[in-house]
Image (cartoon, rainbow, N blue to C red; front, side, top):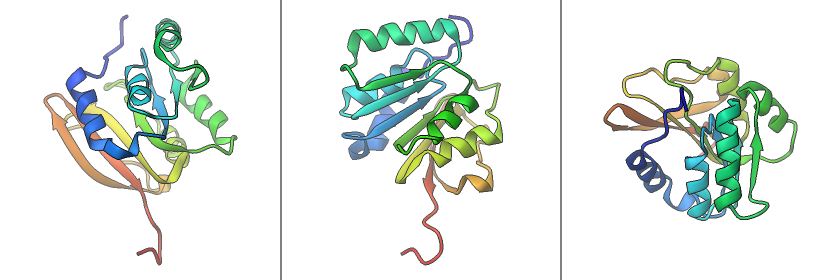
Length: 171
């Protein structure tokens, strides 16, 4: 499909090595999901649930077929709409995610509002991971309330981690 840039297998492997023990039992949000490879791998590694957001109609059809083929019944939700609209809808629910994974098109950076909304959906000890072109600035707006963690480079692709700022008085 034109416009899709799947996360390479070695980057997915590295992602789940980095996340390690955070994945089993986690609620996972796969934003800009494409065919769903990352969110489905999270399920295969023990995540309790994966929610996929993908605006492209063709990619969402492939995603739905992949989910139907391999995901346990009731463990997924697919929102086929623009990222901001889907995140606003999710924000209206009480549920929060342990892991939010963003893999936006590299040449079409997400709007600051999308980044703030994605951060607002994190559980208190949650982590946001962004896949991006190596060397690209992926800082988050201050109102996201997350601090940058470590970045990992895998050739042209990098993974950057962001954590909830514990706030004043936290140990």
